[in-house]
Amino acid sequence: MGRYISKERKQIALQMSLLNIKDPAIYRYTGISERSMRYLRKTYRETGEVVRTLICTGRPRILDSLDANVSCCLCSVVLIC
Image (cartoon, rainbow, N blue to C red; front, side):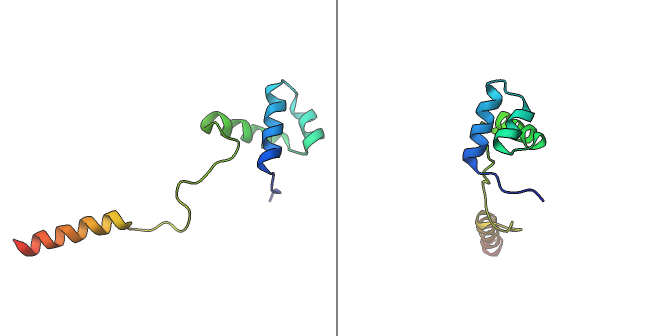
């Protein structure tokens, strides 16, 4: 398992990469491996950020509040009919 790399260190490494500094030199100065640099650049291309932020945190649920609301409304419609 790897170690934690702070957002600030990732931003510095990305700036170095954008200045065409080679990955071995970035590793020497920042300690971020070449593989981590590839992943960091991929994340930056996909999201525009150096770290991914989760939209929803916590345990995924089978139903959310909207699903429960819709099923509740459907039950009351069936009972009325």
